[in-house]
Image (cartoon, rainbow, N blue to C red; front, side, top):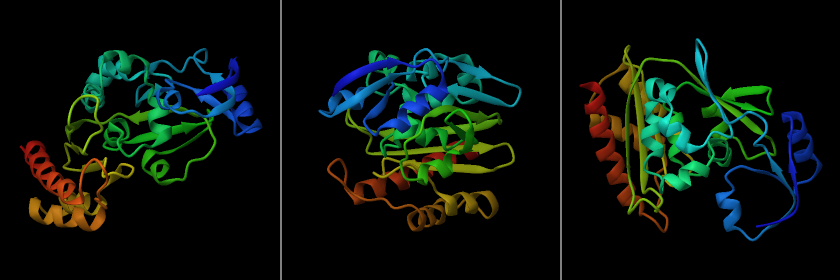
Length: 259
């Protein structure tokens, strides 16, 4: 990556204005993936002075600034109390040095299929804030095409949830073969998220509806998942392998949370 110029923004509005001026102006977060590329950009916008590196607890929600590191998610007491699936999800990503610099805003904005972060966030009542103003459910944001905007905050509504997170990868530096994240409320309302399939993480709506309202037969739940969520192959894993993992993960997760 090459930058022709660098600017440290002082307000969110300033970032939005600069982004709109040119497609060659970019936000600098952790810059891990940008650093691996060989593109040339007019302006790198530093957002470190905007106060978006905080995790704030309110009466009803947890507000996570876009510049919060994955390491902060791993060590923060509020996350541990209300959203500890995030801690579990990020703790297996590469190493502490990497997690100290990788940012949640970049992970969510990029919507990478292999993202442990988005897969786990979908198991909660999560919203995203764009340009410091508009908010929308993360499930809606995940299916939108990428646009030029500034994802400023992730908002998780407080709930009493039980979680289960399963993934498998060759080693800590490798991408996951499949991710399955689940949550269950005390009223037996389920959320099941599938990531690294290898497309963007998505909710398994038919499976969730079945578990919420009809029964606990994991074979039927898996049949519904197959009809609802596309599991395909790529260089990392075949469709057959991912399908096998999904069946195993679903059965284990449902049994764990049901008990």
